[in-house]
Image (cartoon, rainbow, N blue to C red):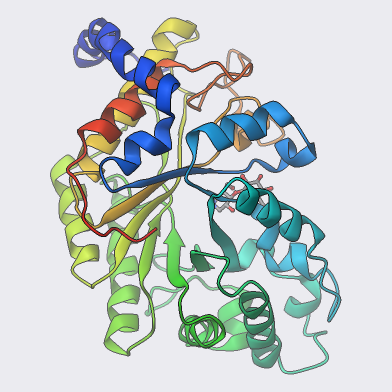
Amino acid sequence: MFKPSRRTLLRLAAGAMLMPALARAAEVGLARIAASRGLAFGTMIEPRSATGDGAAGQLTAENSGLVTDAQFHWAATTPSPGAETLVNADRMLAWAEHQHLSVRGHALLWHLQTPDWWSRGDAGAPARQALTTHVDKLVRRYAGRISCWDVVNEVVRAGDRADGLRDSPLVRLAGADYVDLAFHTAHAADPLARLACNDYGMEVGSRTGLAKRAAFLKLISRLKAKGVPLTTVGIQSHLDVGLPDFDETGFRAFLREVAGHGVDIVLSELDVTDRTAPMDITLRDQMVADTYRRYLDVALDEPKVSAVVCWGLSDRYSWISDLSLPEHRRTDGAPPRPCLFDQAFQAKPACAAVAAALAAAPVRIGSPI
Ligand code: 9MR
């Protein structure tokens, strides 16, 4: 069980100071606060809210300048060879454009969302060719409408391979340069889209975090050295309350080293799991808020951080609220409270904390989104 430190208790007392930020967020929305600093702010459209929950859509529209969602995954768009089902992606995109929101495409290639028929070798064509056909068709179809694609998601796994890549059907069937191939194919299909390598587990300085950072830097260094059109790095930012093992100096240095490769950085899936926090909601909410604020204060100091994307705005639809995933269940059985807004879409201290962090961020000039 997480025991609040003296530092957290002091910050609890400071919680009241966040009230002006909460008022401003309620008045103009989080995206407007971010935009005043040259930052983009948005959220993933939680799949379960896409069932037409108008209130969820309104919350997203009021607080976002960009959105993403899980409709673009290969397994979702092409459940069988040559039979794309893009109705959900088209619907999400039409809604976002109607709301004048930019859209991040997530994700062209992810080992957990690769179609079974492809992994089994039933593509009716060489696996590598089927992969490039998928990337080319999807990116070309939405050319000019997607501001940035997560071309590859979670492709690094320290210890799997000497090159740092995760040992998955993607590398085994399409070759060790499948990441290069995917980026070049996407760039040819939409030369104006920004192209990202998105991954998790690099936010804290644990042994596994440091190993992941090293492997990730090895990959992006190689890609850039070979002229691969990588423009953006996504740091997923799925955080644990209290930020155990968070090394502020080390994280600053990591972000600086990533930025040194000539890419912008997106905090691409921000949320805070409160599984180890006490049951008391007031204390738990403030600890979650404190975690958001501490992380963003460090990350937003890096001028190449261009966007903050929450992985859902409301506790109601967050993936962390999906208790079918045992890793999200609290020992006391209390519903998780990971997001900025609660089950009833009411702003929590975390919303004020994020608003304050956005408002305090150094101004960016010409930040891409
Ligand atoms: O939260 C997302 C969940 O609703 C989807 O069903 C799932 C499969 O598409 O993806 C979840 O989001 C993941 C993201 O795509 C990649 N980083 C980890 C996220 C949580 O698993």
